[in-house]
Image (cartoon, rainbow, N blue to C red; front, top):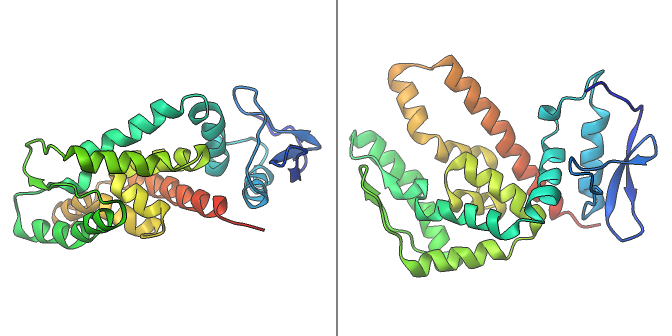
Length: 234
């Protein structure tokens, strides 16, 4: 889409929310709703994405805007479905599935992933089981219930970022750790891509796979920033 505005700015709306104005006109979501943002910090960051556009608007360079749109257009009307999608990852969490060999990879997984599972157990009372090979690991109902409670505490904007982080990492534990600042985006990404990076060390880097990983890291970093902006207070 060709750029149709000169300036973008954050604006405090009468209802206590914030929005973004393009030449004085409020941005609408793809479903034609109001872009109602919860605080000024997020509104200013979203406005900056609109200001940074060139002659054409490229949504791929606007990850905060896309997360805000997702929160309003998808999560808000379908909160239960999105929460259920997120929770599915707990039942097959990446951190619960370990390699049988080689020993070096097994050791790396234990070193990097075990502390995160310990953190989830201490923080939420959710102790996930671990297995090796391709067999399904059935998680305790009590652990899943505790993680469901944890997910339910997040508002719609937080759920949008949590959903993105969970899908990228394949792990609800990693996504929650990112949301709660237990890890940063780089650490979460390294944990999620541990096996891929191990294989690249052994067999060399695949250009397409590396391009995909760079894109995913950008998206995960945006989710981390989104969480941070949501927690910014005047």
